[in-house]
Length: 238
Image (cartoon, rainbow, N blue to C red; front, side, top):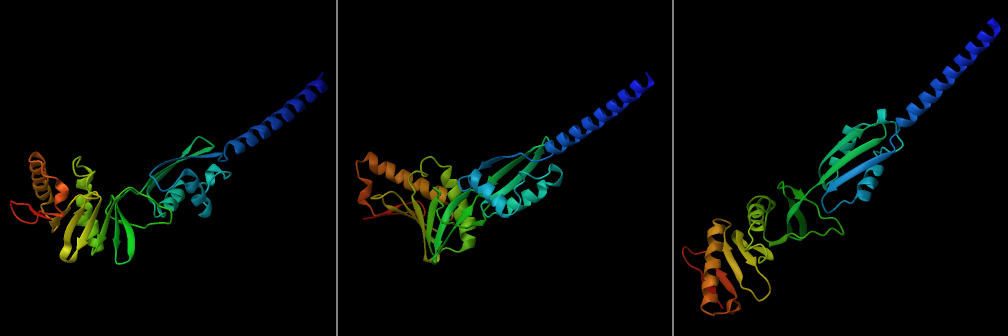
């Protein structure tokens, strides 16, 4: 009887050891990153682009121990990408990494002195990469970077919120002396704004002038330019 009890105790001990080993193995298995769930806002980086970037930076966490994964390192690494505004990374459970990437948002594209670049919503210079396409307004001519980031960016943000002028203005030209010219659709007259000041009032005058012409039956394309630089009047040039 004692022998049987002894054998039974040994068997229970062996079973306990086996169970502990199984539990430890399962616990280690659960501590391995099995998936990265990526969410992104923006038009330049796809999910696969972000995955490839993480691999290039040796930050892709799938297959790594969750304990060894630094979410801060992943955030810092993603933030170095010049298309990224910010990144947030979290651990979810024992096997999943959540990564949210906010991409930079361009508001205008500058073409000046043989170089081209974007200005983003934070008023920072943003590079143009091969294959990148963005439906933003172009600014061409004699334009310094500071002017592009400040006066022109402010105007473009205002323009994008204006339901009347936003669909009409196709591009902006900066001439000598910071003289601003707005280009409308083909066959529509240029709008000479002059310096980038009081543009709300200047464009209000242009709109009022064109609406009066339409009411009189005068075709707007008759004019090549509408000059809004003068106080209280619009000068139309044919």
